[in-house]
Image (cartoon, rainbow, N blue to C red):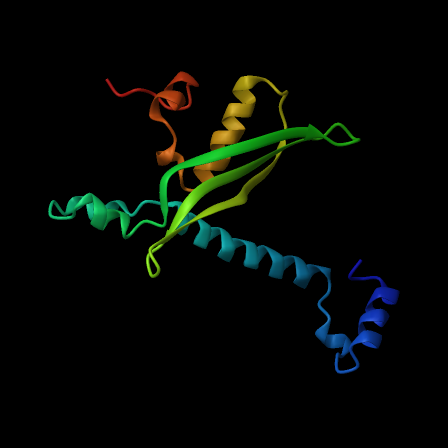
Length: 160
């Protein structure tokens, strides 16, 4: 769409101060979108993570520890799988959590899309579980998922 001459002309008509060279082409627009997403995803990973480095200090209390953690408590997930007209399958995963603003000490419910994945395999429980936990791992929050659930699914081996 961004390459369509009529669309570009429309943009120039609507914004007289805009020059043709200021309208990005598809490759530059794609790069900008990917960079913005990477930046956003890294900040999301920080918000959802627990700052484990504080655990090495025995004088830190639990209440002090929570002061350095944005996502308090558990992180819940919803997922949906569907196929398009060409029979390509997709998995969408949303995370839900309660966030604590350390400045105002207020809690807020938050949710966001953490993964949109094209499924290459059949929709078996094992394939879906691997895709789901792959997305959760990529978000950097696999350590906040129930350990026994991971072991039951064979995605993590119990230590003897």
